[in-house]
Amino acid sequence: MNRILCALFLSSGLNFAGDLKIVDAWIRAVPLSSKATAAFMTIVNKSDTPVLITGGSCQLAGEIKPMITTKQDDGVMGMALVKSFAVPAKGKRVLEPGGDHLMLMKLSEVPRAGSIVPLVLTTEAGGKPGSIRLDVPVR
Amino acid sequence: MARHRQRDVRARRIGLILFAGCAAVAIPMLAILFLIANKPSSPWFGQYDPDAHPAYNFSLTDHNGNAVRLQDFRGQAVLLCFGFTRCPNICPTTLGNLAAVYRKLPPAAQERTKVVFVSVDERDSPESLKEYVPFFNERFLGLTGPPADIATTARAYGAFFRKAPAAGSDKDDYLIDHSTYTHLIDPEGNLRVLYRFEQLPETDKIAEDVQRVLGMPVAEKQP
Image (tube, rainbow over all chains, first blue to last red):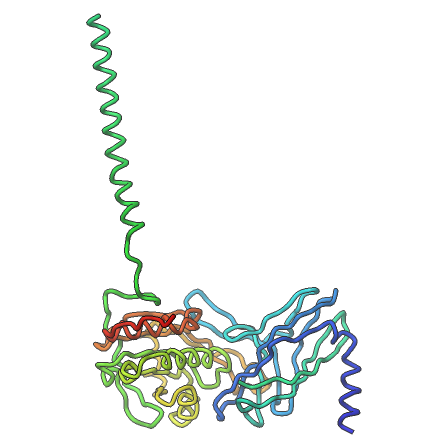
């Protein structure tokens, strides 16, 4: 049953999932008391349409939100929630430590180093919602 | 004839004056350029403070519940940074890099180095810091204290922090914007080197600075 659902899911997202490639995705291992962690990856868009990454979901996080990192001249840094990450047509977007990231919040369980977390990214391209499934290692 | 000779002498004199004038300008300029080109570049990777200002002698509580002052670390190099345990990106990056710096130190230098993380979050406690800071290295120390003491300490180190809106739907789960500088304090308790967040991935170079501040010979790199 799960497999069928999964296949259905994949096929629904396949419209442009083939044009969207996720490279080097990983989730940061954090202390077990943590309320949040971050996922990093490079999102490559091979299509002619800009793609938005609007968030995502996974079993152990209540919410997954796109966050940008802000920095002032005096070294003060912070994070700000954004509606989405835009990945330009025929371009890429890098999410990396100290920079933009997907924040996994309201963790029901802190992902352990060495484990693999199934995660679904929600996307939007040309006004159409989509999704892409990933298996993300924790390190 | 005599007039010709006179003109000749005058021309020669003018030439000589011009030459002397040019030399007077050019020689010091060349000397300065030479000095600039040959000036030994600073061996320090971070921003070095030759004036050695005493670092603020804070009085806080460590993650084991013990009272701690900066002066307790006299004789040791201290790497000090500010943050909060709910920080999912900046603080783990900082502490992860400092853990790599620490691993690269020879054992004798590790014995004389303390990495200190000062929480700027009133929601943090010795307990929450104990779950967080030793995760990166069990010898690292998390510090907390009454908000007024944290504010005084932060100000003394030129650090700034302020509450920022929550990212998720839970408003109590707010974030904190904060300074991301790391200070290297020498064994006499003076501010010596300052690192920007972007410099922290250069863990080899920071490890060299730590050994230098400890007065230890900087190990030659293995080829």
